[in-house]
Amino acid sequence: MEKLTHFPLRAQEDAIKRALILGGFTLLDDGRAHEVETRDWTIQLFERPEGKARKPILLEDGAYALRSELLAAQLSGIDASSLPLKAFSAGRVYDGNNATHPCRTCIQGVWAADHIPLNEYLRFGSLLVESVLGVGAETELNTLDGGAIEVTATVDGTSFPFALAGRATPLARALLGVANSDVSVWFFDIDVDAVTQAVYGFESADDMYSPLASSLKKHKGNDSTFGGLYTSRASNILRSMGFAEFSGLKIYEDDCYKKMNMIQESWDRNNAGIQLVEPLGSFTGLPTVLTPALQEALAANWKAGEKKCRLFEFGHIFLPGIAGGAPTEKLSLAFGAYEPKMDKAKWQAVVDEFLTRLGIENHFFIPLPPGQAPAYHPAEGWVIMDQNMRYLESNFGGISPVALANHGIETQAYMAMFEFEPIEAKAAEEFDFTPAEYL
View (cartoon, rainbow, N blue to C red):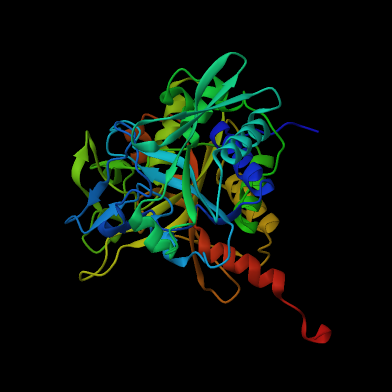
């Protein structure tokens, strides 16, 4: 069987999630919960030692922030009436202390029970590390300032922090609804970025995030992408079609939408991203579409001399609230490519194959009127509709010649942009459809 590419950050995250589930933990959320929260949730769930606390990134007028803790806003929805409680979430968190790479992949969990002896933590920590990193990996627990515990893993003589844990703060206990002081409540936090960098031996975060096809193709694995039914299925389909997953910019520069040749009229809300209160270097706002990150990745490949390139990314996109309302946040999927024999007909066939294999037979490609969508090539853009001519919030086509020139891509490249929930709902609708004669 041909080995598929497996993005290291995804592979490591999936391995940790599987190990936690085998260890009796329940997965609460897998990257679908909102990443933008009201500022009320910029709290610490346990006392982090100096230098290990994340700095909240405030948005717009300061009423909102990018989440720095995964579970803070989820605690009140967790049923802690029955103990022991073992649950976790996975997703992205943000840290304003790191202007270059402020977004981190994180796994954060809670363990509550009537009594949890320290030896039980050590036993579980050792089993978790061995499940993720292999038999022979060693584990050590060290108490830090403030009572937090750092779990250190050692593999082949190399030691690195694997997790940070601590007793719940009074506020976290209250949000969880645990009033009995005899109940022990602990949180743990696994920085998947840091673990991946150590395990794979990346010299820097830049190396780990490299979108170059030649780098991504070094990492092979046919393990299924862990996740929800359709997100997992979409990832697996794209991997089998020769696409490599990457992780692009999560905060954009101010001119990114002009660079991709998006409509600049005031009515187009895609130009009005949610702005950071304090820019992180040249990064000023959140993505309204994943296009800029995809085009930057394709450009990096072309400039590096890659002859062909197929990339995809799942990520959140954001729009400011209307008339003081809450921001809008959606899960999005983007994929793009260039290669010697790719043209608009072949790109149509690629998108058609993806949708069909995802389970959407009833899809139709309607050409975009020339000039109406300048981010696409004037003669190579389509929207995706269902059998009732309902727009599935998805489009694809050749990248605008202006955008190609702005990025320094000297060949025709192609992209597809999906708001994933309408695609997911359509696939589920067709799967659940039963002909009248079988009712």
